[in-house]
Length: 235
Image (cartoon, helix red, strand yellow):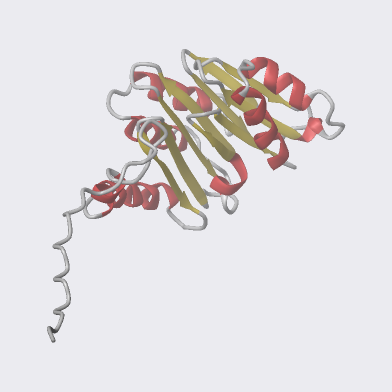
């Protein structure tokens, strides 16, 4: 089972994505994007990382997620084995599920959110992910983590989960990209990694490095003391 969620919080301008699977390296395979393009999730039996990149390029120019997904997936003769979801700069969503995707497979949408899955134990898995995200209050990372946990509890993966990932981006903050590439308890490890990323000194450091809205941001520097001039002899 691979499940991904893409979301946009219009109040804060924050994009978020999360994914979990019973295979390796779900973050590297599935999640892509940022605050200048929106996010994509490319997955499936034969996932295309090219799809993930191409749909971002189209959305970056202002194309809607639905149109971008259609333009990327339609020409691909191998599309029957793949899934793609996207969320654009306005929070609109689009998705595609090929007919040869391992059942139970498909996607569900909500306001500012799209959840995709394949090899599902039941439709309740992606419904739990979507509904938990929409009903959970708080910061984007917390809502995404709650959504993943709910999906795992609703059925999870018959193979067991092996990797999980989280991606959060906005113009006002540095990107948060967390990946657990191989673990017997990837959701627990991802939660621990998120807690570490919010703790000092790492969190303090992220507040002084550049962002899209503040590209020249740097730590306040103390003006150095002027060096004494060398002494000159007199004749």
